[in-house]
Image (cartoon, rainbow, N blue to C red; front, side):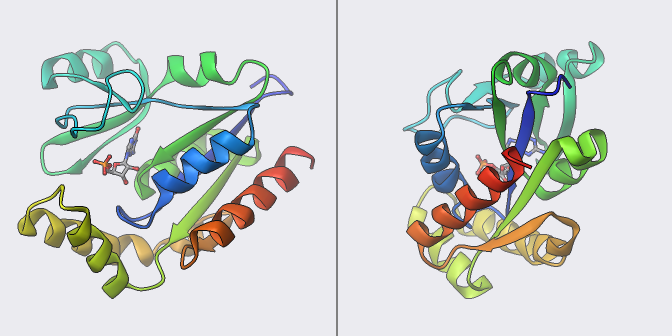
Length: 189
Ligand code: 5GP
């Protein structure tokens, strides 16, 4: 990584609010660009290909794996691939930093690859009950999907001490401020 480039990773259990925090951080810090991940899951109604994700077929995703195009990838939920494209890190970090919004195992792999060049922040929900309320309220997943995500969240919460810092998202504005202060401290260190 050239000296002036840096990587910020936000990781969290699904539903902890990290995508909302990521959008707010990107608005507040124009020198940060979003790393658009590749995935094989279907787009949600409000999502746009190339902006929220690069939506790929399983064949296309597996070709990208075989071509060595992915910095890391996971089958986050049964059968669905999610991964960070090396090209996103290379292109989006020009002149500043790149922000990744990825799952806990992916975040651990990015930390291993980049060490002190990456700041990895774990966004924690106030509680598992609150997480269940948010996931059910979102209305984008079936009950079975919500249960799968909750089980995974319990496992991921157990890994929060692996990261550079933990931000508890019980109040969105406070969580955004806390995230920004971690980012600023890292960038100026
Ligand atoms: P969702 O389907 O709700 O958009 O995302 C499900 C999970 O996959 C979230 O935890 C999200 O952060 C994670 N995810 C998104 N992109 C990537 C990626 O490139 N790599 C990994 N490892 N996880 C990702």
